[in-house]
Image (spheres, rainbow, N blue to C red):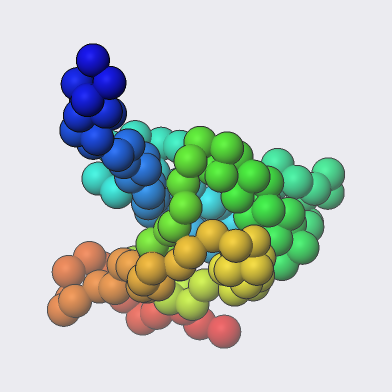
Length: 147
């Protein structure tokens, strides 16, 4: 009897740890606001969304580094609770034909706050839309903007 019981105990496979969950953090940072959006790796399921405007009262402070940092800290708390251990980061500026191709002040502050929080960071890439060729006609009319 004892031998059979010992054999059964040794045959049981050790329990595997739950797979580490990685997510994708999409940072959209303009002059006026910073939006942080975490999805799963496929991008199909949203895990959390925070923005600078949710953290401050005054509209002029939505794009500030402080608001982005607060949003990032709250976002990290939420995704840690959901079991996310690492993030790939995609940073985006308004871009396109009429928007600036540089990110706002909040993007760098948000990335810094996330790296300090203990979440692993995989890749950081810039996904700002950049126009190629002459595609859409830029605003300003035939002779451009006259200053």
